[in-house]
Image (tube, rainbow, N blue to C red; front, side, top):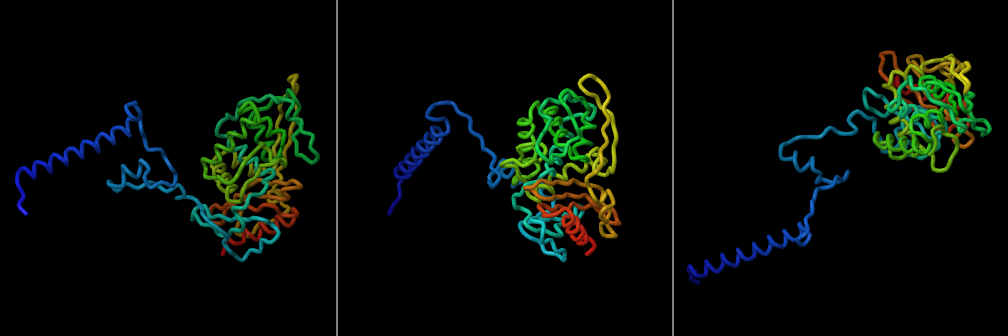
Length: 335
């Protein structure tokens, strides 16, 4: 078959026409049939076509992993510790980014007053220690067995004083004072708690109050508790408070008269009721107890070389068993 110049010209014209049609189709799709529109590539956490990937793959850039300095586990990690009573347990080596022990760490459970670690974290991030808060009538909690520091409507104290009452005496009234002082209402503060938790990757927890008293849809996992506690520890004020055995201060009532407050830690390791393994020093932590959540504990500890660890146990039937099992858990550090 002989190819002529006229044939080649016709082929070029057909190709040009096809290209023009394709260009018009693309133009119409992008412009919305003549309407002006801006199109961008939305971010999707699971997408392989994010703007970072498109821009940087060809230049061989890499993004730092979100979990680079985190202890990560998808399931149980066995050890010699016998954590049978506690529903969930976790031991993390912070320097090594290793999970040394894990049991049901992604199971949603009630945190009781371990909630107050998140409350303190949000308060330290958004408040100032010298800020003075005035208690509303909402601090006068009447639930049976609720831990209180004795606030009344009109009382005033600084955020620093309130944090001591929150973390040492586990004051539920102090939690309400802080929430309303930071955000104006408990509801707004809890929204902030949940927002900050998601930023940490703690996506399997949800808070509906700042103190941890039993309420529907209020839960946490042992793993999320580790993430939250890990974020709080670098705050000097937080670490100082959880390491304190006693604290005394004076605040004011609604008429400006002085009121004394003395706090004692609820951490039985710091009080000397229980001893950790020989090579472990308990820096501090937070306890939590309700009839529904049972007995819970999160701890920050160090070994003889100064290496830090975080341990969590949720839902033990008795306080004594909680400390016995926590001591077993800490024993994994030396192995």
